[in-house]
Length: 308
Image (cartoon, rainbow, N blue to C red; front, top):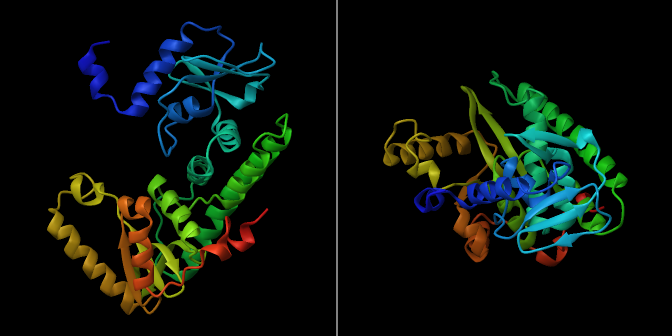
């Protein structure tokens, strides 16, 4: 391809193109897997792969790695594969299992969070609905949790069928910790940061109501404080602003916050962005301004009821 076309691709796009090129020279029995499958499925990742393409080769009994491709041993069941743009790829569930066993805890959580949320979306849980009272909101949460827990059970079952013990403990922790309530990878990373900083476990996407109906939804709620994760696109992307100028978006947000506080569900709202999450210290300061007590040693690695 032309160098200019390559330069316009993001890192995920470059890895997908590299995967297509590498697989074209391999046996037709191989299945794209691990980080390469994450890229093909458009699942979130902490850091898109720069290295070799990953595949599962049913004809191998041990891993073989070169600078260009890593061949993982098979076998792999047909029901654990899907076709994406002409490539045979591990299914979302199998990809989540492989990612949880072989990648970092954070990358595993990002992947499984997205898989759980997609399972709830396929069940129709996020279709437009009229939730104008707490009862309907609670029913919605129950449906999302039920769909996600069904997928979580399938992931644990797949994990139990995997040979060997490498990464099993980490994968179990990832699957227990994951949630369908992270709307994007940024919120998944923010939740991980809250854990590491020692914050109490937050409720996510909590809806608050007043006499007029739904006052708003908050990304994270800890006690009587709310934390909103703001992606840069919220103010910079014209499509996300729905034609409004950034100042109008900010004004609408302030009006929404006043209404949320008046609803009586929360008393304070803080805001953070990707840089705050990555650096940790700015996020810790925001939490302390909200009077959220941080106890890193108490959290250790998992919130208490999530430990497995």
